[in-house]
Length: 170
Image (cartoon, rainbow, N blue to C red):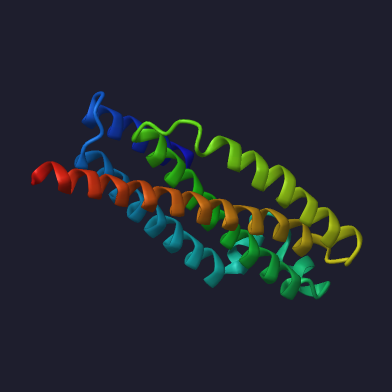
């Protein structure tokens, strides 16, 4: 989904020039909605047919004979959720870059993914013996927190713009 994020940034920058306008925020919101719609549909498809996805990687008989399908399904659901929040974070970061906030997304991404995500994965795998699910849960939590942080920043920036823009009309 990073190509959608890059397209969002370029599209917004082309529409605003040097001054941030309502059009820049509108394009950012449209991009957020489109990206999450696409990711949600793909995720629902993957979760609905896990056997098809598994057949790309391993022999279906091996998966069923070893009784691993329930573990596979839970890991797949966690990974789909992780991709959803990662896509939301990437698109929000691209929208923030499009309105001129270039470093807002970089530092939190490092903090959330490298500090929280890796630490949580390490703890869940090594101390609580969660295996693959624990390894996926760390980045999932990190991407959830990152997307939440970036969304809060996006909406606070949007509301501040709305307030300034409404005062211009008076």
